[in-house]
Length: 71
Image (cartoon, helix red, strand yellow):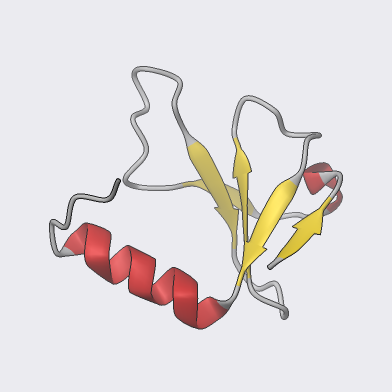
């Protein structure tokens, strides 16, 4: 797993459709990054982003869509 120290260096951030927009507990993802899927805390746009391998991110999204409760 890679880390991008300043996530604001990337463009095209969008809030996850599964984030809780009312409580401020949102994550954002950036599409089109060749090395994986960058994820950051929406409250800290200049903070770090974790880059997940595309297969791992796809598995995570499928689990969430399938209703799995993640610890």
